[in-house]
Length: 284
Image (tube, rainbow, N blue to C red; front, side, top):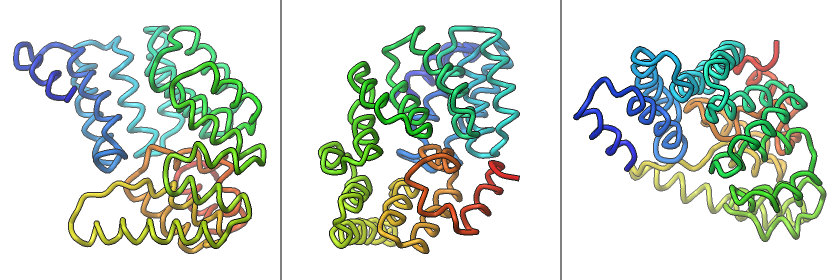
């Protein structure tokens, strides 16, 4: 819907930089939810470059360019440079600051990432995306007590924060109450020792998704989350198959945190894991 409004604005004035930046930002919401992130991020970059040609100080547009650099190109250093330039131009650019936390988290600079999260929170504590970055930074740092405390402070994805907090602190029964998807439920079941039940849940869920895709339905199911579920029940081959699907569409959800996300721990001693990290430029 937001794309339609921004496009209507451009029909009135094709040089309206903020509308081009809005379109770029909207595509980052569409990726992984309604379209493959690879395609959405590229569409966002096209619009963002148009915005920057009209207004070189647009932090929102610079963030969209950097998002493509991160999740499609895996150019982490280039994305960081672009985001820092955007923040230097506009210190209150929430989009640039949040994406900088993702770069820092993904590349393992967790203390720096958390300082950026806190700085962004001080500027805008109501931003609907903040919960995702709080979850990523604290989960990768394995600060589960802090996750639980922050779940009381933010309404943005507070259930996700609680799920990760309870799961990481070995309270899977409590985590189950906040499992928002079948893969998350499977992970919590496996953590509580209900391996057969977890395997049945993810097997049935994956079969439904596969059937829908064979019938030509467009289904974006979060293959990175599916990979975590398979890993939790010891199904490594299926986990890596799901990870490769996630890599092919350049998922912007949890795949960027492959290096540090705890639910990928069961895969870390497999050569395929390190091969994928190298392709993502997260390991030499």
